[in-house]
Figure 1: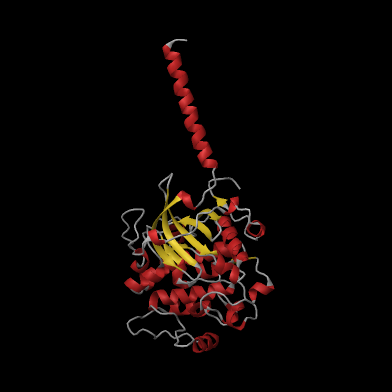
Figure 2 (figure 1 turned 90 degrees about the horizontal axis):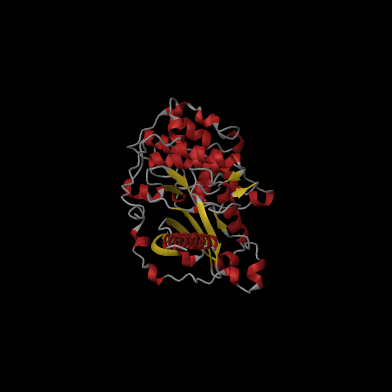
Length: 367
């Protein structure tokens, strides 16, 4: 065999070996050790959210870490699976944060989600304040399209609030945190109190059974808040808050320096109708889209994301965390320990039989 042929064989063998190694690497399950912890970017009741980097690709994700001990204590394992299943179902929508991976170990559940470097709407409003009616209309349209998509899949979000509305690098909204969401709601689930009190619909408070109307009510609260800087039923105690919500009277003079159009008032009153059957959007989201407040509005521009967003995030790189509260971002990730033991290799029968045994997900693999 001549030298040239030997060289060709060696090169082909090396190329094949590289390809085999790459395929073997791709077939390995994703675990906590697949990621580098970069920054803490949020904290919730059940865990923490971090910016992480995947070691092999260098891609950045938001990693939501939920403590198993807290979930098991409240018997909420079904919520963990519901959130995972809803996120996989919504993967085609660019209005919702995409789930890339989900896995678990002995101590925690992990969701690896699309990273939105613009932060969340609550922190934006805390720093920048309220929006003009025109800019609020742009963002209201996105929330309407998001709820329209979810309701078409029989999904009720149930916790629409600024903290759960994320902002991408271009200033567009994406909905995150589906921990309270439910698909094909049962009678028992419809009588559970869930969400955030300032955005509760009257039927949520009475626990007489709620449906998709709770999302329309919360939508009305948020559109109002975008313009006025406060929710429509602000009170000092929870009892007073619930009383005002059930009374249902909306006042548009809460902020002297804000003047709104009559069309704005009309839409808010129709979204905040006490009877959920009377709320605009209950029969069809077209009723909201065709409301005079949206006259001549460029819906296609929002759908295709060709309209420039009012919010300038100032994001300069993919790993930018400047739009997140420094109370979180200044935390040292070296002090975090999420126990990297892989649950899939556990001999613990209780772990293997639990409701979340099928929690693992990898968007790059075919389901």
